[in-house]
Length: 113
Image (tube, rainbow, N blue to C red; front, top):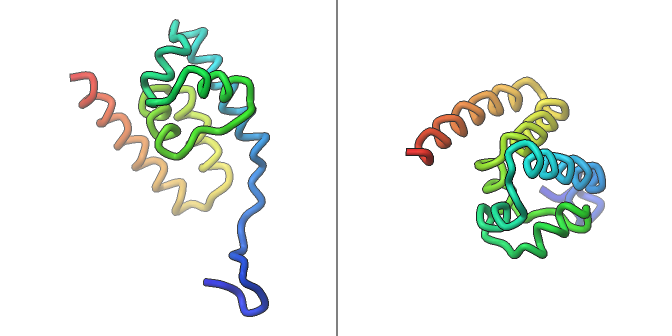
């Protein structure tokens, strides 16, 4: 709902640079620890290798679908996203995250089969 004195929705101040840094470090961990390469990340998300390199170089953020796909495949990305949600939201959201973690775990088991 719009406030009475303006036409813009009130938005939280989201620090995009922080998210770029966190995502980049999570993707580098994925590359190093799990022996994944840029081509794998591109295949997982359905984007070009250049796009993945832009994420690694902190130039751009993935769109929502690519982020969900990254969370499905990368425990490092999933961890930073869920940790940030838990840090920034109230108890109700934290409970949602716990349920979401269970859902992701069951989804991973389903995708492996």
